[in-house]
Image 1: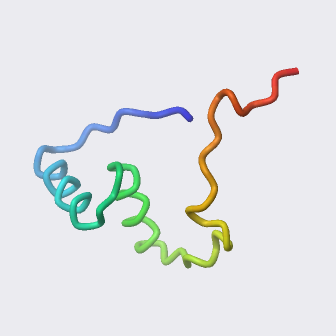
Image 2: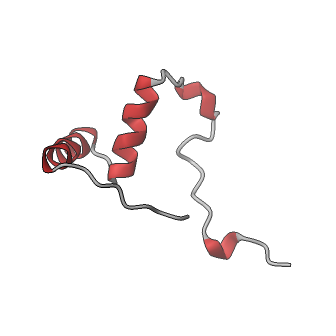
Length: 65
């Protein structure tokens, strides 16, 4: 999975840190996803019964031909 660097102000970083602790999140990405899903009103059931039960794919999982 690719990643990116995002520039945020120190105030924003402090808010992200507080939100991460509050949500007991593992990453800032998770905090941002929770916030965006609330903003865009994405229903939890949109992700199906396997939500949070399926691990992410790694580079090793890709089939090379």
